[in-house]
Length: 153
Length: 147
Image 1 (tube, rainbow over the protein chains, first blue to last red):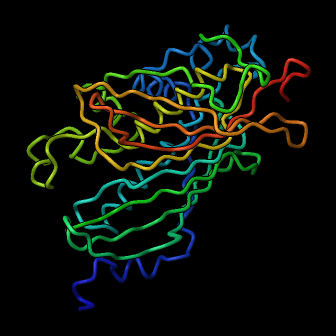
Image 2 (cartoon, chains in turn red, yellow; image 1 turned 90 degrees about the vertical axis):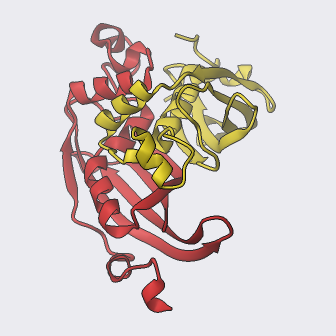
């Protein structure tokens, strides 16, 4: 049975262990690309003159922008940990302060939970919960996130 | 931009101004590029079907960001989104309207800050709730500005 398990040795070995931190510099252009991709016209995300007069005193990123910080590396990590077929189960995001252009964000990820279940329609499935922590250049907590991923054969 | 929302304007049961998105395959590709999520189920129909899906599907985190916009549009720029959760229960497909909605479930003051809790969700054109979730925001009060 054990060789059929979708919970690989690699996942077991990484359970509860913090991964190598990823350091990401936040350029204004990255925020702009994010805002264009979600098609959000709010001037607070893009218009420096407008944002200067707001309580933030300058451009900030939309709260969910943090989800894409370090995401490319996270996605390649997923590719090696989970079966080829996978779905996103859910996202729980807690925001402590806005991200600004020029910030340097350090992203740390660990696997918080792994479970396997037999689904009626999709057969054997593995549920992996990742905990992601985001800190800025002043070592202040910017956001925390739990991401639930589902892998299936 | 929507006007600033104040704590006094909100009651349990208040509706969050709905936000309608019309994701296209082009938008999914833009999201793939912006987010670094190049999983093929979001732009390669043959691949998506080989994984047992009816066709390409909208990225969960793009939907989560639409729900983020639902909240930032509604609460105004003096508000802060403190928490956002969502469960990707059903699929949303490009070419179909994706309707973001929500309702206030609780309001309270704690440590001098005005909190509003909401149920939020995404509906497809058939009225099915594909992505339910919750949001917690702080907004200013007319009596005192938000910190």
